[in-house]
Image (cartoon, rainbow, N blue to C red):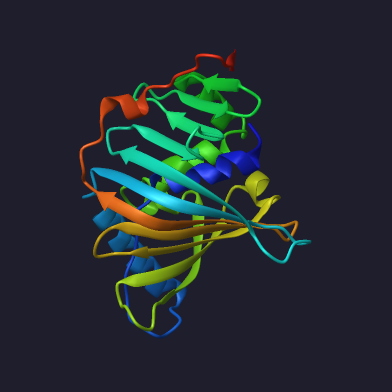
Length: 233
């Protein structure tokens, strides 16, 4: 899987942040707010969300927009899709496997839990490692993947923070300059995630609607590969 595709997964899984309104925070202040986010995130058992995916290319003035949905359970279920068909589906099973289905080409790729762990050891699983770190339960675990450069609380809502993160993985940093997050510490809800690429492009996932701690049917996390050519890694 291409690194850029994997970074999009980061939508899966997050819940976020708080602090003082109206002033740019120091890295230490941002780290304190980030730790509050992690406490709130640990209390979220499930997330169901609708989002707009905005891809900004350097050569295009208006970003390309696609609508999508995401479901996540604390127990491990994760589903991220663009389009209703869907056009692109990324799904993690409760057994730790990862599926990527391309609705246009009708091709599906699947990684077992063991295959993902092997890729991570070889330095090829940065995207999956990012998903895991975004669901980390401690600041120490989070900072194994990210460097907190700073943050800024919203001037009109002290519960909303925007954070700027750097990547500690040198291979991933060849493609990504930084990641910015915007979220709510009180609710533990993500508002936006943007990945800034070194080629001048960016990918933003802007949450338009969400529900926390609601029941998610088991059928949501079942992968239907009927009509797909399946390739196992």
